[in-house]
Length: 92
Image (cartoon, rainbow, N blue to C red; front, side, top):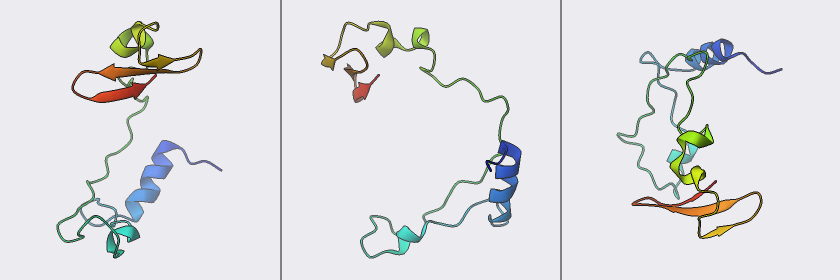
C-alpha cells in the first residue's frame, strides 16, 4: 500500500540522522564508485508541500521548447528532440 506524503516523510525522517540527513547510498563505498565518501553529504530532508507546486514546463504553454511543435532536430507524432541554447538537447 502506498504511503501518503506525510507518512513517507515521517518514515524517511526516522532513518535520518540528527540533522535530518539520510545515510549515503552503499554504492559510495564501492571500489568503482565515482565518489569519495569523505565530505559527501545528503541534503537534509524537507517536509512535503501539499499541494505540490507546478513544475516548470508541466504546462506546455509555459514551456518554450514545447510551444513550437513543428520545430526540432527530430520528431514524430509522440516525441520531439529539440536543442535548448547552452544546455544541449531535450525530449518533449
